[in-house]
Image 1 (spheres, helix red, strand yellow):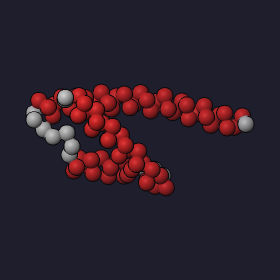
Image 2 (cartoon, one colour):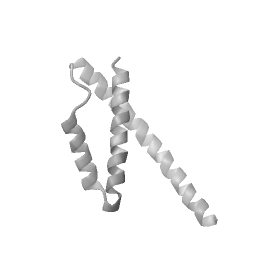
Image 3 (spheres, one colour):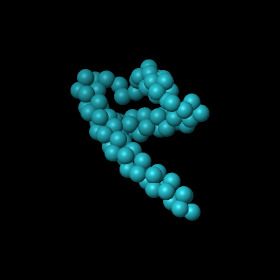
Image 4 (cartoon, helix red, strand yellow):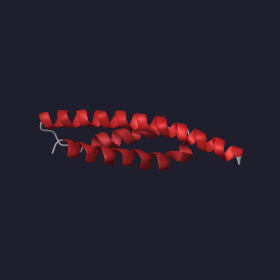
Length: 89
């Protein structure tokens, strides 16, 4: 059981790092939303999202995780778009 606790502790540590990065990304999404609002731009840009996905896949070291990485990034982009829409209301 000590091994499982060690693994869980490591996951907890990674989650803390992810939350910090998540907050930074959301802060940037708010800035992007304000810029888009000021310049009368649409929130959703399909080409940009496809580019992000391609870059993430290219940066992925373990290609066995590709499907999951795509799902993860798509979810983050979905959350970012929602935040951007909420920001410019």
